[in-house]
Figure: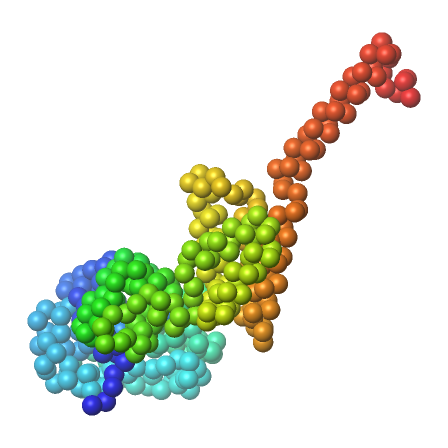
Length: 386
């Protein structure tokens, strides 16, 4: 049989199957069930959280001839079967990344004039809509403002800031959020179980952190991990870390502690050990950033008094400045090593608190000296003394 990747195999087929977007799902159900569907939706959010999937589900619901209820398609009628086979005549799915020009939009505008074949609506799904050219957006404006009653637009984008305000004002915008760590962990363990594998909570946590709230990214990592399982069918934490080029958090914390206290040789030694065990330089860099950020937040809230906040913020600035360098470098391990050395040597730089304290002490000493001088010349001011 033809192999299907997990992200497609377990792609939601109804709004109830969508993971971690409860507010958006409930809003869409109300729109559909109460027959208050706007002529244009704009789904916005990071990659892999269900924008295109939700767009397709909305289209399927609107096109279904015999729905169980407006927000639940029957999946059995001619329209639903045609949609599942990707040959529905009334639903056009367009990738704006490859069809960016004004001529492509004119084709859509021309198609709007024709009545739907199967159901009540002709539906246009435009993925990565922010990739359209300026002239293409301008060509779409009039139709988007006053479309025919049988036309619905559903846009999806990862970069809403690149879409003109004139387009945004004509759409109902729905902001999809990254999936929470807890929800994603439970989802991954459920999928692993369906695939006949065992995924513990620690391993699921590592995958969910690496995916940064993206379901598709998480399933891709899980799929790679499943390929490495042995006869026990257990997805181990060590296998996931090795596969992703990451290292255990305790090593990162130990590395950062040496950096903060200026122990350069110890920090480099730990770093060398990480890379020799298969750690990827860029992934280690990201882990250091995440851990340092946690230290900054905990210290600012008073949960952690081990380190000075001003020092942590200075280290954070160094990491930020090196982020683009390590991304673009031919030798990212060199950038990582040099960054660790720079961060470690900041421990010898006087802290802001110390500088301010010394300055106050100097001012106090100067004032005391001045007072002693004035005592020697009673009734005089400093101009007369000098």
